[in-house]
Length: 123
Image (cartoon, rainbow, N blue to C red; front, top):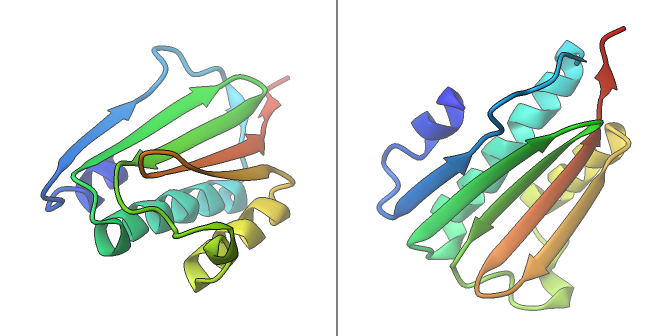
C-alpha cells in the first residue's frame, strides 16, 4: 500500500486505494510478492504515463486468491489490437502466467485491469 501511494504521490489526479479490513494469513513466496509488486507498479506507471486519466483506483480483495483491480478514466488502449502491443502489457501477461493466474483487460470509460493470483492459506 505504501509503495503504491508513493508511486502516485505526484499524480495530478485523484487516486484511491481500497484494501480489505482483514487479510487472511497466506503463504506468499518472495518471488510471488515481487511479481505482485511489479504488476502493480507497471499498471500504475501506465496510468501516469499513457492514460491521460484524472482518476485512478486500485481495489484489492483477498480470499483463496488475490484479486487486484486497477482502473482509470483515461483514453484506454484504443481497441482489441492494442491489448498486447506494448512491452508493459506483455510483461504483465508473462508475470501472470508465471503465477498461474488470470489477467483481464476491460475498456469501459477508461481502462480496467484485473489480476487474479492464486494464493495458499497457511496450514
